[in-house]
Image 1 (tube, rainbow, N blue to C red):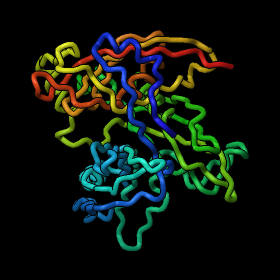
Image 2: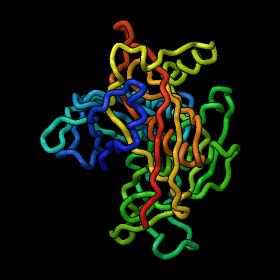
Image 3: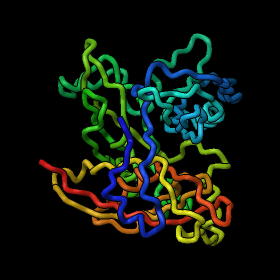
Length: 352
């Protein structure tokens, strides 16, 4: 799965001082030349209290690794306990890789790894699959083409964005979603069953639509599968995470730089195109949305906020995509700065 932005939705950025340059592609592990090689993999520390109480578990960490093999950003995307999330993050964020290539050229890539915490004699088989809502054995009530003997394995599952107003005001929330995955590992249907606030359901559905799996199998052949996933929006984040730092500044009334004040135009290094929301596919609508974000001093997009949207689903799809963008670090007076910009997106009606 190549990740390249469609140029048609970037035209509105030019007035904000964003250079219209080609961006680097970021690949999944299965798309790279040969086998991924790790240079250094510090082992995680088993949380003492959990180990003492005989608690086993897993955390899944997703990392962006640059063309030099350095981990630039990691995030916990699944955890059986927040202490496992913390331990896994602290380990994986320090991993180092030998440079990976695509067609012989060094490239950046996304890697997602499960970190298992187990005691002697205990099994954590398929626990990472269950975290994403797939039981070891599907319900017999499901159609025959949704039966499997091996559940889908998570490959790339970016965490849902925390709705801006709720996070700013420290409002916790959760959502429960059912979703279907086809024989290629692509999400093909999503249904929000419940949410403490509608925005949590929208945010989770938008994230899940971009998830990718190694397909389920039945007798060795690819099969469809249905999962049921609950998000509590409490995945581990380190205290120094840029989102947390920026929220603190916003609460203090901090003014951020604008794109026009920078030494040079913002230069995109990695972009992800938003998905056309599955919930709107049958309506065949075109739409628009404007997302406000802060590009932090390292160039990562943070705290997406929906300013306007012709349909809520368009806003959440765009916000989910733009959260994964990366720019060259913005500078003002030669110093790295945080900059606030608004990004317009357009959605074309899907073709029959």
